[in-house]
Amino acid sequence: MSAAGQKAKRAAEDASFATSESFGLFMEGLRSLKKFTEESEKAQPDHTVLQQRLDDALASLGKCEIAYPEDSLPLYTLGLALTMKNQILYAEMLMKHGKESPRLTRSAPRRALEPIKLTTGEGGSEAHANTKAKGKRRKKEGLAGVYYVETEYLPCPADRPWPHLNHAADLFEKILKKGPSEMHAAAAYNLAHVWSKRDAPSDLHRAEALLIGINEPSPTHKPAAAAPKQGVFTRLSNTVRRAMRALFPGKPRDESAESLAAQEHLMTWLQSRTLLASVTARSDLKAMAPNKQNFYPGLATIALSKARSAIDKAFRESELPAVKKTDLEADYWTKAGFLAYNQAFAMPPDDIEFDAYLSEAESFLRHALDLKENWNPAQIYLAQVLQSQGRIEEAQKYLEAVVGKPPAPAAPAQTSPPATQTPAQTANPATSDTPEEERKV
Image (cartoon, rainbow, N blue to C red; front, side, top):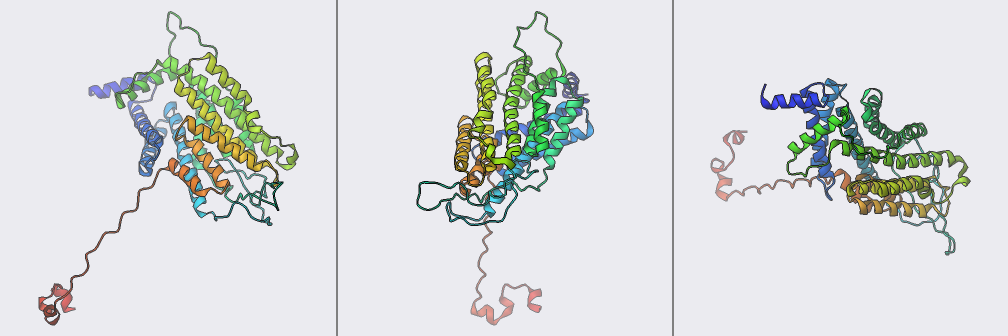
């Protein structure tokens, strides 16, 4: 066996992979996924590059799932890649919807419209109870006549299946049942995130139960004189860090795996608090829909207040790097924006606060993008808000930043004009440029 092969075998054994082939497939998928992420963070990503990198990652990790179904880290990473693929497909659906939507003015006389089913979740599995949202909303008082805001541009068909989300959910559930305990919190959070995207009331309740079960990390203690035995996930982290430094040389060396694991646990818990508050509020909105007089203003900021307090406390008491703090802030304001968007479409059809909730959602999501430019979840939700306000062209720009700009169509090949025949050629076919076989015909 070559030196490189022996090194890969030792790395696989150290990280508890079944074989060196499993480790190699995992690293191929991780490398493609990293390149996909780097491309997606550009202001104008290339559609072809995005698609190729993500498909390469799914292919490598999918092979690993089939051949080595007990290796938890490739399964976990495949689950993440599948949610990214679903996000791309969802953004493409919104782009298609925006292009096909009729262009209506922002104000028009009130008229009766047929009831429609709506949903706001990325999964699109459950319709909202609002059946009049396609009509004219928010009566503005104090103006001459009656003024209504158009809300014709609502995405998310209720009957569309999302197989990538279902596959990802199966993988995260498998890790929760059979994977190492060090991965349970991360798997639970991502499984809850998948269920929240599917948006059905039963999925939201399941997500709540999972998120409640994610325990707050204990305060950081100083390491003992004798270092404790590393767990499987810590060994995985060490191995992956070494491999990624080899794949991407020139990157600064990061902190120890133990320190990173503690940070990731804290990050997972804080993000789970934000997601829990958002999911609970969305579930309440669905329950309130038949009795709309129970709605109250400011639900987004009130519902997320406990998560806000936990984040602020962590910022004061922990030593999270600035980049992780930014990630937490961007995630918080993204979920706040999406929750405000949900509340807008759960309001009574003529509620005076409808437009205010959409404006609040836009403000929150733009703040998230100020914190983390080109943050795909915020771009997608902001596009939904803009579509709901009839600002289709502006929404398309944000969606294009997620799916990438398709290559420009190739210019048609220029053909030279047919040569004109001279009078002599016309009179004498034998001297023309036409092949002999064609002249005979």
